[in-house]
Image (cartoon, rainbow, N blue to C red):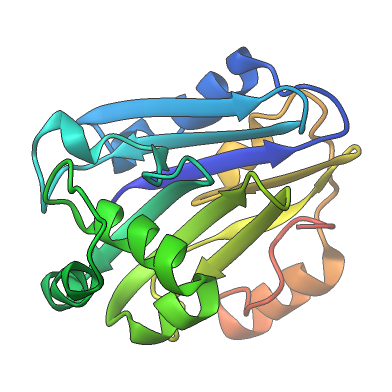
Length: 201
């Protein structure tokens, strides 16, 4: 289990905000933490790491692809990452830095594109991917939605995280309780996707 969080804004994302969001997820990833931002693009990614596949610093996130085009903040495990890595090796041109499934995933995305790479993945995951060339943010989960990913609007910012508490860490968070979701919780004992207990999330 790891924790991801981030903000896409019309203005530079403050490092202190990313730190506050990531700190609320420390229980998801006590082994390492990282953040990355591009002030010009108004994007910031944060990560809390629970090291499982590669315990070395080479698994640090957010992780850039070798080309530098893609930045990935990822939670989960790609069970077939060794097979994907072998397939990438057949193409050539990849100089692996470590043994993490995160690196396999970001290089698979760089080689095949996001949809094709995820189509080849067997596992459980939630991710945020920033494409520096197209200035595009992609959020994705595994087919069953096993790993959590919340997203929505706080003020004028698009925010996302593994847990709602990281979204609530945004200083402008004042989203009201969604009364329809509250009714669903009362009748079903859970809030079904794609809703959350808060409006606009």
